[in-house]
Length: 431
Image (cartoon, rainbow, N blue to C red; front, top):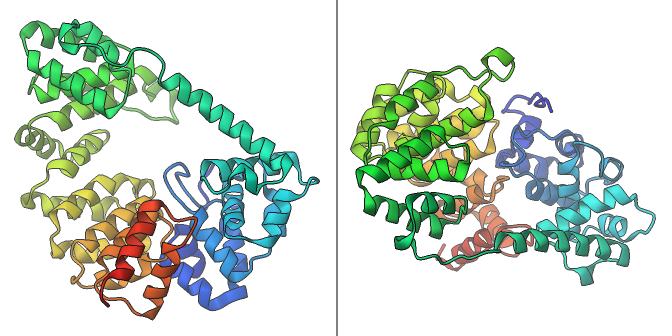
């Protein structure tokens, strides 16, 4: 699906498309005059990466506040490419919208449209079967059964082998299980062995295996063991072209998987070693940028600040802002107020709400820097729960609008639990 062209970030529509709190506040002031802009956002999904960007809570709350006409949403629910419509309707249902409640309860509602809305109610934990009509309840229970089948499949089999008694190949095979507790125990056992035979087997797996879980585990273990052998392979794969639009320059899936695991290898090297590689690769371009950003996110020092800022300034528009999220995380960790003007600009203009989340988080670490408080105040109405949570915790002072917003968040059925807890905690703090 082609990306929707976004309006200028200074306009109400452009801000609403980006999920920026300033757009929400403008729409609240403008009332019915903002209906067309909000409908445009819901009906024509503005997100570049729907899997990673939230809009439903933001749009559902605003639709309720503006008494948005629901007929256009009902007409599109269930249509291809209309996932955001269903998510927004589910949010409005949870907020008690009478027209949406009637739509879900009506036996005449189109089955496809009802099914996608009920799936959102189930997946978002916004409704229980007792809350629904018999027809919608049957759909909810079908969703629950499908989810239960997946959960049961995920826990089958033996889970507690004695790692010390296993061969290296047996440990790598357990790498298919991606749970963090198992991953850490497997890494610990592989690194504790650390002998040449084990490292040879790990390198052969990283170089030749085709199973992601095994390759990733081998890559991490070799990094933690500070083994230099994968560096040449990493440089080779990072430098290769990978053009999705040109078949002759497109990397095959297995090689792309191995390349991503080599980024994890570099990240797991001892920090001085990883930083030395990242600094050497900066400016190489292509996939080197991915590896460099990942290392800087975890290990950047104050000496890297100007390089990080230059990269963000030069690449903030690339891939809609996706290209700079690691560097923004690194700037947040450094917490230098000299980065504030750049962070404010990114927060105000980026199309990618996850990039804005990181810029706001960085500003939350320096709330007295120029422009930071204004951005944190607007972030209380942001589309991303994590962005709003940072604003709840770190906005130094609350005016009446901010306090009322935080009170609403503390009681919102659409806000994530962590956000509700942070909002409630902020209300208990002195003004």
